[in-house]
Image (cartoon, rainbow, N blue to C red):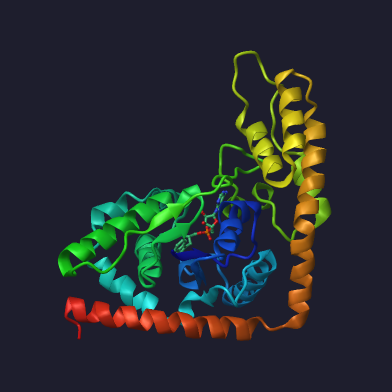
Length: 324
Ligand code: TYM
């Protein structure tokens, strides 16, 4: 399979990003051709992004990704704006994208509701995402659940291009993991995300005390009532526990919960312990990589490899549509 996926350099890599996407990125490196992109053009749609912070965030995110296990020998890791063909293909694909489809994107509608100044980049965002994927003729895209609508649109765009200009792009399929939808601990009705503020996410490299505090104050409920389902906050804690602890430990907690004997304090303490154990090697590697200071060279080499593929595809696209 040819795998492509992207992530925005918005400052902090959190557990939602990791369990929803990055963990799969790492696993898929075995036996597939993987291309992973730090999408800085997309991040520009964020009104509060400061130029200095953007420069810092890109390198920091690249280090985080390597620490998680992305191996630049196996995968292509690069920054989107180092490959200008992304924006060229974005424009061309925009011309086979339905305006109506873009108005129906829920992420756009949500963001447009939340801010006063709505830039056109936000509206065009999903076309650029389609261009990212199709530029490498990728057929599979590991993402969290919040990206499914954008992927559906990428398939529609691919189909429409192929119909008008002849079969070229595969219709990219999502790969979802068990952690495809990690919720905020402070408000489990929303996904874990940086945009709601620091209480709503846990960073992989965050200070231990701060992580402890966030887990201890996670929203739960008054205990399982007969005939009721687990509340979203408790379900989210169980999901996180499943992702970091051995199956027997999870099973034991589930039994206690069913029997009405579970103290949420114990669940939280245990989750904290296993999570820190899980994150320890990643955090350690992150420190080592930072000291090595090779990140710029790694990204430059990644961009070089990405450009080679992108150039071939864009040449073909230009010919198909009559630009050359
Ligand atoms: P971004 O940067 O918001 O998130 C990166 C990845 O993390 C996943 N994710 C989550 N998964 C589970 N639970 C959560 N709470 C959670 N929060 C984030 C996202 O689904 C994503 O997989 N538009 C994309 C970036 C992008 C892209 C692409 C992705 C640009 N071009 C091409 C795939 C292919 C985004 O904003 O992701």
